Each structure stands twice: as structure tokens, then as C-alpha cells.
Length: 308
Image (cartoon, rainbow, N blue to C red; front, side):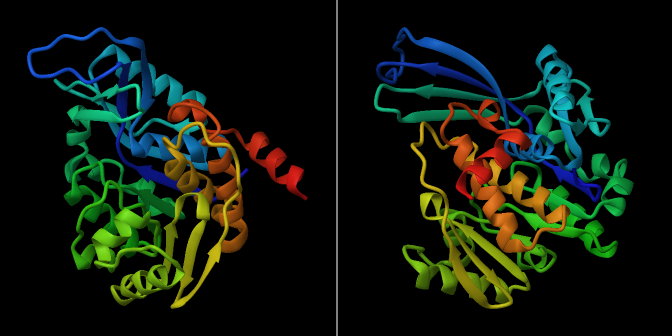
């Protein structure tokens, strides 16, 4: 169990998922099946992955003044996450993703950020001490960018390590990137930040060098089933992932990030931390859904022991 403190700052969504034969045309009503509501949001997914894998974690986030917000807070607490800094924002609803999935497995998604928009710099200011006292701050990009920047500045000022998962993909200002200690983009996100299309080790290395040039010491580019390109101070290598039969890849990246930080906080070197995170993500992709697929610590340890 980690004793060093992790703070995750990020988003919470309720995912409403409906399976359809085909997407409706404008004005058309179609009958769906297998309607489910699952808890998601990149911030919450990463917090759950860290909590279940053993991190000592607080989560800074917002839910709405609604029943599902209360249910999500209870579930997060059950996943070993400190939820004292997850507030119900007055007059808002919890963030929602409406997801239609057709028979070919394609999806269309519409998102209402809802209470996630209330995660403002003023909200952050109430919980500054959590970041000041933490060893690591982990963030993504489903929260207001000005809050991400404010949190990174605060962390840097107080020697708290900043790990940024730059998802969803978008361009970012160089002053923010200069505050980041470790960045964990996938190929699409890395291309958005660097202009380099990543299709092999050489292009991953070029993208990593550009990110190093922006002031980021450690770059991990996640490459799906191939593994991760790890580059530290300009020296890069591929760390392969584990081969499993994937059911779906929802939250695989989030699981990787949460588990990676847990291992680093426990004092593992980066190579071992990546292996631990690979194991967590490998388990997650063999299950359906976002948070329901995220493994607990004993499952990750058992997976790794089975390989030795």
C-alpha cells in the first residue's frame, strides 16, 4: 500500500449506453436494447484505477446536485478514494455521456460536461493544501484548461510531481507543458502535440524528443497492444505490453495511468512501474465497460505472479 499521497484532478461522468441495430436518421425513432448506466469520466476512471491498485489518493472533482452524483461519490469511496474534495456543485447536474453503439461496434457520443465545468480555479483554491502536501498530481484534459494550468503551477511551486495524461487530444500551450514532469499521450494525442504521426519506434522517438524540447523530462507514449515508448532525458526504448484476448479497450489508458502512478509512489523504478501498469490494463481490456473493468491490486499481483 502506498504511503506517499496522490491527488487526481479531473472529470466525472455518468455514461448512458444504448445498443442499436443502426443509428437513427434525423426525425427517426429506433428501438434499442441493453441500456446501461456506467460511471466514467477520465478523471474518475484514473482515480478508481489508482484506488483499487493501492494508492493513497484524494480526488478533486465535481458532481451535480442529483441522485447519480451521490451514488458516484459512494462508489468512489468504496474504491478506496478520498472524496472529501468531490463536491456537489449547486444548480448543476452530474456530467453525462450519451452513447449509441451500433451492430458494427461503432459509437456516436454526445457529452454534457455538467458539473465538470464547475471545477474552476476558484474551486481548486479550496483544496490547494491537498496538492501542496501530495507527492504526485495526476491530471487529464476533460476539466477546464485554466484549472489544469493553475494546478500544475501550484504543484511545481511546492515540488509536487506533475503527471499529465493529455486526453482527449488537443493542442496545449508550451507554458503548461514546461510544468509537466511526466506526460502519457497515446499516438493520436502525441501527434496533436508534436505534429509527428507515430507508426514505429523511430517516429515515437522523434515525437518524444519534441516533448523533451518543451521541458518534459519523462515521456511515455502508449501504443495500444504494442506497449509503451518510454523516453527519459532523450533516451528511449519500447516496453512491450502483455498479449491478451481483448473484449473492449474502454478505460485501458486510464487504468494504465492510475496503476503506473501507484507503482511509482511505492518506489518502483519506471520500468517496473510500466510493467505493473501494463498488467492492470491487460486485465481491464478482457472485461466490458469502463470502471467495471478496472482490476483490484490482488488481481494485478496474481497476473504478474502467473508470468514469473
